[in-house]
Image (cartoon, rainbow, N blue to C red; front, side, top):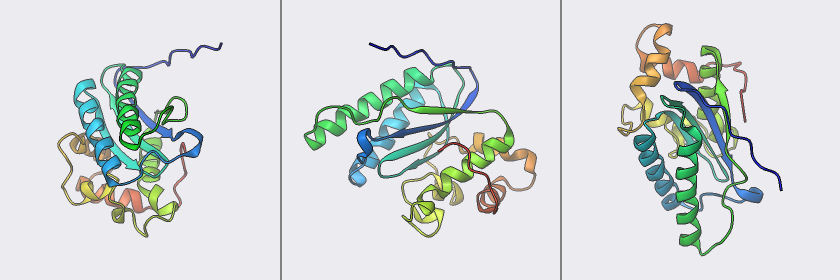
Length: 188
């Protein structure tokens, strides 16, 4: 039996968190599943005092951009995904794993990596062929940030603070950042 090593966490760290469905299965079958996932995310953000900077819910995987003021990413993700998996299985009459192993956290260590990761998350549904523009995907934080309609648990002002060094209106800078061609892809 192999044991999983605890992950190293730091207060104030930013992570690009990815999680996939077990054996490639969808973790969202419809809008109800996605709405419920966002409800669990909102509750966990409040409980763990995270700053959720961005999210994108695909069919068989998710992307989250989280800042953790406390070193509690593992505790929060275990609580969050455990509750969602229990709810998902009960709703769909299933048993067993919903997620493929543990989530994957990629620590963000520079402004360039932060901006590139943010753009990658925003473009994910376009790259997958789900929509023609990022603001056409309803299961991402992108349109809400552009339109100033973000839910209270989405840390829009915190995200804009990171973009502050670029100067000018932060919402405009955000829009320009995610449209800039020639970006590198960080993480998956």
